[in-house]
Length: 391
Ligand SMILES: *Cc1c(COP(=O)(O)O)cnc(C)c1O
Image 1: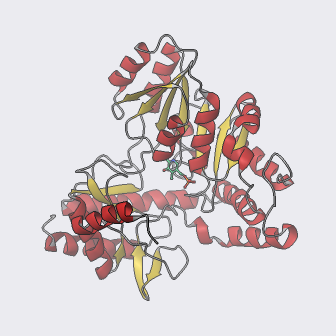
Image 2: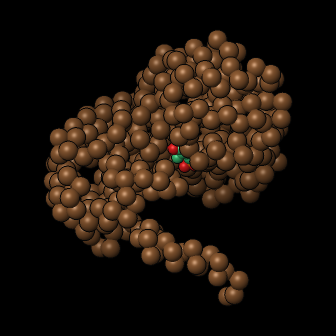
Image 3: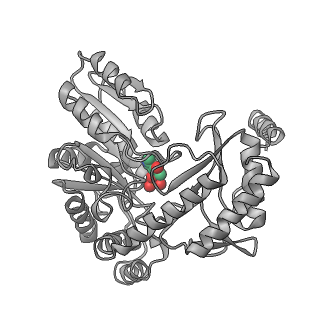
């Protein structure tokens, strides 16, 4: 078809630069090992922190929900698409996060878009960490609010931005709880103190912290003992929770407001019963099987120390996300390809997901990996790293 020459030209340029990617389909479920091209390889690229995507309790809940309530809901939440199980999941999430109320969106991405675009006008200012997730950035783009970006986790710079924004109705500080590409944790206690000093609201996106940090995986707010001092907690149901969706946990006022003004909530169909029931069961698993989180952290320590001892640059990670920072885009993808050849699936990540010159292979261990699998992965990292002269 004619008309797309300008796009094809850009794609051709990517191919020349070695940055053109094809999708890699899995031929198995999302486990510690997955099947790619007929070969079993060690999976280090998923966000399936606790192995919940295939947990028997979640599968059973999903199947029973389909049998009883069908495959879809046929409507948006605000017209005819709210089932009792949607309300029950939201009540469970609010209790889990120690907030008054919670609201589920179709994804973590749409949650950030929905919340930010609903609560900010041109009278307000949003103050955002430079490394925040794309969904926060896009959410901010949807508002007419004044935007200020502070240097990544730089509290002096955050204070500067707060001082410069005296004249607005509402100031909202927004940050990832755990930064998805570096695995470092936001300095929430300092952020909250500054917010209280300057009378700002705090919004934390705990996509990579829910199910990972805090009591039973309640997230960074609970991890730092800040329950009740962070105004808006966003979470995803797509990572450690193992299914799909996003949610916001906050005051009843905000939740009631979003039911009227959260555009993805209003204009996109609600989650099918299988998704909602599986998410709900996942919260029960978090509360009842705390050994999963213990295993996750045990594996995290083992693998992180292993990579560091091999001499890789793992940046400032403090969580199960451990980047192996390479710098050059093409070399990162080459490294990733070599790892796959030797039996490890760890994706190369480059611009625009991370800044230019900071391309990397990102690893995430899960509770499901055995020590033998992780040691085998370390051996493969060593072999591929030496061959490409990265270490
Ligand atoms: C993954 C991620 C999201 C998006 O969540 P989905 O449920 O996959 O849409 C939002 N914010 C952050 C920080 C993330 O890492």
